[in-house]
Length: 317
Image (cartoon, rainbow, N blue to C red; front, side, top):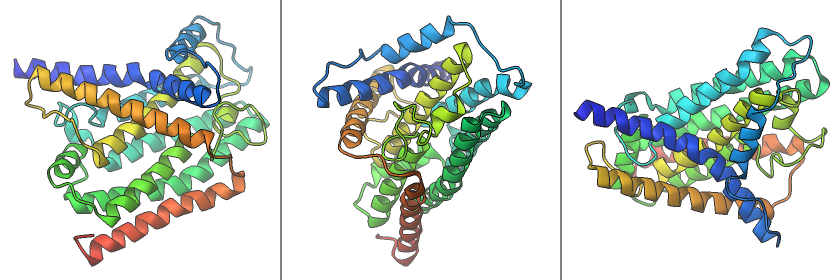
């Protein structure tokens, strides 16, 4: 019975992240529209768009290879697995032993790799520009992510997210190194998801877009799968920040069904707060030039280095 309950809890987590990822995008758009004194789309509008795309016919370029057809599913699979491994409403689930910070970075890197290859596969100029920018940003974001994981693992004594969340919840203290790691992870999350000020997810201006440039040639179910993977990636970073730095309300793996329910409610509250704060930040910030993005990500890497140095110098910091 315990095995079935653990399997059920893991399946619920996979379903929760899949269901709430587009809703988080819809909440961000709704709050941004309200801040701009507009009505805005419904919260479920991203789901309506995905269902509409799934019903449309797929149009492929003549010179598209098998990689172009397979890339959306590979990107979705790696992102969904990574998002499902991050503890959302409970720690110590069935597959929690694989929820390692280094493994998450590897899964996200694999998704970025196939997305860049798909952008260059059909040989369009926009796809090549978007892929080159994505690789440039990734080459700066991944070292910053590794340094942030290094800070957290040194403090918690493990890179496994369930153990990190349990340690942070039981031994919560204000540390400068943890603050540096939080700010650095926020910068990486904004850059990795193509949000303002790095990129504008609502623009189609060829000279500035990054993510949109790589998927301009996709349509139908392929585009729907990629858009769902993009929403899952944003939810992954929100879940990661909530799990590591705000592990409040997380149920234990041996908790009751009632504890799991409370954990889901706390998780929904975290998503609502994070989506609202992201909308406020994007409305109050202007998009920066593409050539300023390395400096933006360099600040995250520098914060990671300083945080690691503080951990080595003094364990209390």
